[in-house]
Amino acid sequence: MSLVFTKGDLVYTDYKWTAYPTDDPRITGKPDSTYLNRGEGYEIVYFIDRYMRANNWSNKNTGQKIEKFLKTSKSGKQSHTDWRKELSNNFSL
Image (cartoon, rainbow, N blue to C red; front, top):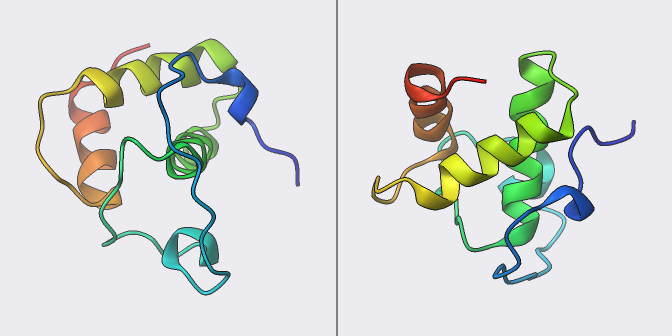
């Protein structure tokens, strides 16, 4: 399965790229209650790709708008679930 949103689609360049063990929730596909680290590139790409798939979106510009929303939001530390709710309530294409 190919990604809808990839590392090459990111606009911001100030991410860290830390590899995670294969049993990490961010890798296993069960990150809902896991804190979303907005400074970690792999997490951002994964989160945006997953959110776009859930909404049947495939335009990379949409992913870039989500990225900007995540990077510029003043919200504090939140889980993946919290960020999905935040996007659902406040993000528009």
